[in-house]
Amino acid sequence: MFGRRTFGKQKHSFADLKKMMRPTPDSDGVTRVFSKELWNDPKIGSMLRELGFAPDDQRNIMRTADDYIALFAAARYRLQQRTETFNSEMTARHGYCRAAPFLVIGDTIWDGEHGAFLYAQMDLIGFDDWNVVMLAADARTTQLCGLPAHPGSVPAHTQAMTGHVIRWKTRYEFALEEFGVTATGGQGVTREQFEAQKGALRQEIIDTVASMKPRAASGS
Image (cartoon, rainbow, N blue to C red; front, side, top):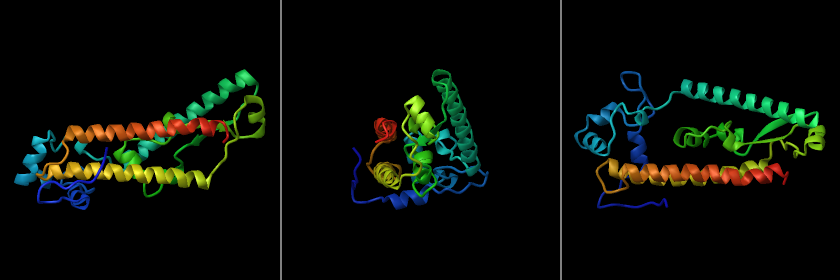
């Protein structure tokens, strides 16, 4: 679905696009994907408007570090609540349960160099249900509730998931580069095509993680 292409005589690289999509605030203190300076450029500004963008569109406003801190804190709190509910319900059923969440894409990845791709570009949060499996935190829970033991940190699993994330990130960057060709006056993919490709990739990530949950839940 995603691939590198060159359109016309001029090739616009992803590096060129990233220079335009600067992660620094404009003069009004708002950080935009495409800065206000670009909107004043006769060629780029008019092209962005033709593509259906506007400087203050929500999709052109980037979240700040504080925004993400609050987002992660809220998601972590929701996970704590779900864990407490799970343990309460399983205790009522089996007499005892001490389960703990296992993140299929783990904290090491979210906190590493590729984490921003998942939460900033794909709008995914690792503490949400799509990425979580409840596993036994002790032997008694395994015995009474039939849950496999929580493995803790598994380097081989982390390495495998990191490989998946790197491949997803590369495909996203190729798609973004093609959209960047259009945004700078070439004949790349349209905004609608880019958003469709991005949405399909996001769903693929969720589906891939879902396919790995039974393996984690079976203890294999």
